[in-house]
Image 1 (cartoon, rainbow, N blue to C red):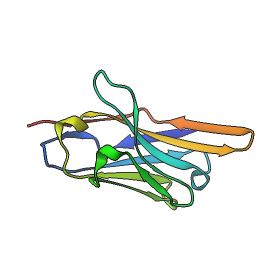
Image 2 (tube, rainbow, N blue to C red):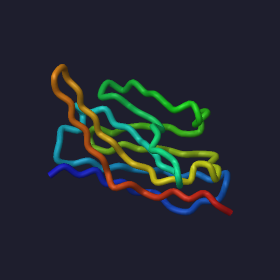
Image 3 (spheres, rainbow, N blue to C red):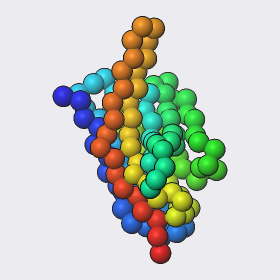
Length: 119
């Protein structure tokens, strides 16, 4: 059974930090690109950061160097370190696992973890 379980969300003051974790099970984690997406109130879901199985990283422009994605294949876990948070970062953050091969694609989603940035 495939599972992506996010944790680490919560309420934080502007300027604060949070570290999100996504624990994966039920598939070969090291084969998959892992991403964090977010969906703010009344907004569409958007990509935050992505790390491929080879370690190549891409970030959304809005992050401006504030977030860091990393993965630990030994623990089947992907992380998102978020610094200098502001109220615009308030959203549900989702973990995504993606595998693609010519003629085959597979992706999985977690249930999301709420991040609220407010004073």
